[in-house]
Amino acid sequence: MPIVKRQDFGTDRAPEWCRVAEGICGMGVWACGLDGRAEPHFHDNEEFWFVIKGKARVRTEGEEYVVEKGDVVCTRMGDEHAVIEVPEAPYEHVWIACHSRGRGRKGHLHRGEDEPA
Image 1 (cartoon, one colour):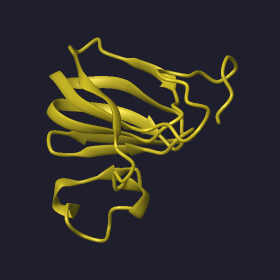
Image 2 (cartoon, one colour):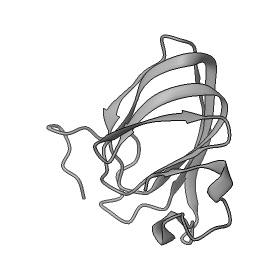
Image 3 (cartoon, one colour):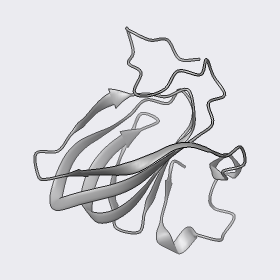
């Protein structure tokens, strides 16, 4: 389950791998309007998006989800994910990346150009 709904915080419904144990290697804020998109990409680390405004349709682990304020998108190292559509703007999420466990590459990696670690 790559999406943690606000009612699931503090429960065992969140996967164990979603717990940040190895420290943070990067963080920031991603914001956009109705035309916002993030191309499909993956990372050499786990990444978490804490949705703080708006609503978006995202794809992760091959499934699509609608996320909104209070939700957390959790992506494993190597899992491709994307923001497909923003039906409610402004949309913002705070992203946090954990220390790289793969090849140590930073930033967005793409299928066909970069192989998963």
